[in-house]
Amino acid sequence: MSKSPLIRTLSDLQFGNQFAQLGEEFFARVQPTAISAPYLVAHSPALFSELNFAGELIQDHSFLDVFSGNQLATGSLSLAAVYSGHQFGVWAGQLGDGRALLLGDLSIADKSEKQEFQLKGAGITPFSRSGDGRAVLRSSIREFLCSEAMAGLGIPTTRALCVIGSEQRVLREQVEKTAIVTRVAPSFIRFGSFEHMYYQGKGEQLRELADFLLQQHYPELQDDAQPYAALLRNICERTARLIAQWQSVGFMHGVMNTDNMSVLGLTLDYGPFGFMDGYDAQHICNHSDTSGRYRYELQPQIGQWNCHALAQAMLPLIGDVDTTQEALSTYVPTYEARYQELMLAKLGLISADATMREQDTALLEKYLELMARNRSDYTLSFRRLSQITSGRNASADDLAAQYQQERTLLDLFLDRESVQAWLQDYRTRLQRQAGDESARQQAMNRVNPKFILRNHLAQQAIEKAEQHDFSEVRKLLDILTHPFDEQEENAHYAKEAPEWAKQLSISCSS
Ligand code: AMP
Ligand code: MG
Image (cartoon, rainbow, N blue to C red):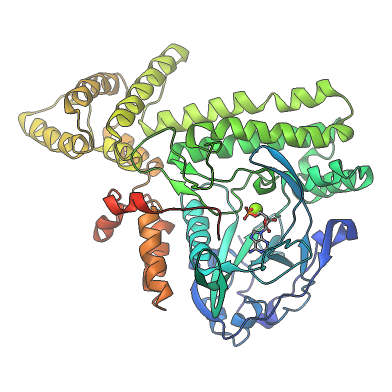
């Protein structure tokens, strides 16, 4: 495949503005507000490479200015999009990019869609309401690391190109340093973008938005007999599959408001997110979520609720309730099939038929139950499972090795006896599975990450960064970019969260 020439300097960058094709009803043109003395906190080498950006681009004298919003890149229009949304289940009316500015888009060789670039934290917009248009260094580092960690896990997400810090401060619960993250995605259009036009009674714009989406991002649906219903169905399916992936790695978004839901099925707007440490399906990662609406076990249902809100907004386009409901009805079966597929792969099981799949699912549920009862670390409980062998044709030496394998897994559980009993069933099941054991183990290690962005790891990197030491941010980024690799030298980054991590309070304030 031919690679396009590397982009080495900012003068090689020519921004287009696909989103600006939509009329003035969709955005406001706003210049970023300059910040003082910008400096580089970190950039994502993986994303640079995907965008054909040369490493040396970071040395371009304009890099800091462009990605801090101090200077507009060639062709960039700089606009804030308007959208509305349901927040915590309640209609919130108009919201919008209160602190994000779209610079424009670039065509990247080998990518079918253009990539939009957005600065988050670049100053006040007409949609800032009472906000200051800024983002703090702490939350910017969290968004940066998690975006790239999710990409490393193979989960659809908006990406993060770089974090640029400034000595400028803002007031949150305390005075904090500010920063700007450059986010990259084919589009930042949200469920709330549709809801906005629907609730404002702007039928023409609603259609314009759907047509734009079909043309730019779902061209394969344009010739469908009912393109708007097909669009809704596809968004529901992507959302269902996305949330199945979240569940499978123990990711909790924290604020699944409809304004934070991407119409491309990407993970969008990283705020009070978290990864599951000790398994607890009722875990609430966002301290501002007092009712637990967005707790882990409810994410799939909330995804469906959000799809309903989108369907409501798209009803005038689709025309009738039955067709709309039919499109919506794909959500549950899509979610269930994908979740089951992902979770059984985590156990390394290939179910030969429906009966076996049912038995395998029961085995999975039993394991989750044991994890819940013991509050065992979600990530490690799956990762260490790959060390278990079936015991088929085992020699005495193998049995000794088997004991060793079990021990590291059992260390995660207080109630060892129950787990040992479960392991017996698991081994019996593995014995029924044809094929090479080491191939199974490798396959399990490709779906059960060893490294996730644990809150305490992010916190340690943030604390150093507050002291102008970015080594830990960069180190973590590097580890999380390939989370399935053993990386023996980084073993301590895979450890369970320490006790103090439980005290970390992650809220909406960012
Ligand atoms: P979020 O909960 O981060 O998705 O934010 C909800 C809405 O509030 C979005 O429209 C944001 O753009 C806006 N917002 C959040 N923080 C700020 C801020 N510091 N300044 C301006 N707008 C903000
Ligand atoms: Mg948001």
